[in-house]
Amino acid sequence: MSEIIEKNNRKEGGRIRRADICLMAFFLLLALGSFAWAAMSRKEGQSLRISCDGEVIEEVALAQRERHDPAGAARGSASETARYCLLLYVNGRASCEWYGDRPDLAAAVSEGNSYNLLAVSGAHVWMEAADCRDQICVHHIPIAGGGESIICLPHKLAVEIVGGADTETPDGMAKVGETEGETGSDNGTFRNGGGYETDG
Image (cartoon, rainbow, N blue to C red; front, side, top):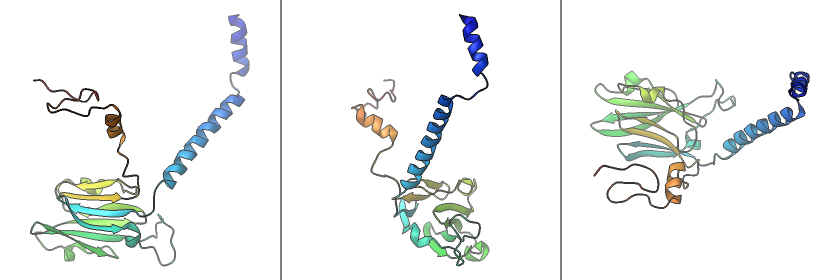
């Protein structure tokens, strides 16, 4: 019996079967469908919220801050231009100034003041430059979807895109806590959710 199975395996060993093709087509369609769903689920009306130390400095619609090349460059192309927001920190207060072109930081920033330079191009937002020590915000990947953010801890700055994702729906962890019932008690333990327990 094992000789028959081994013989059949040798016959079909190098060929792709119809079932293999159907399986590959299914996964390809699944990947394309999820990509299309993700692209279509981004709602219009996204806005950029800039806050410092918990206080909102500015919130503007991303469509207002987009600027494209006069020749009609496509979004994301190399010739597309960006708008810049220079965030200045003077005497413990933050202010925001928008520029059409990248400002000269040596001329725009007075000595002793701190800054962050934010860039907006199409649907992408990124930190172009900053004078913070760690430069983590500058090395952060560009953000584009609702709920994404760039944080600069030394300057207590948060830049986030709001309104593009379903912000009413809690994340997966919050959903688990809601469905399992008890979310916590006064002594700091989570019993049903399996979170944490303290000694004592």
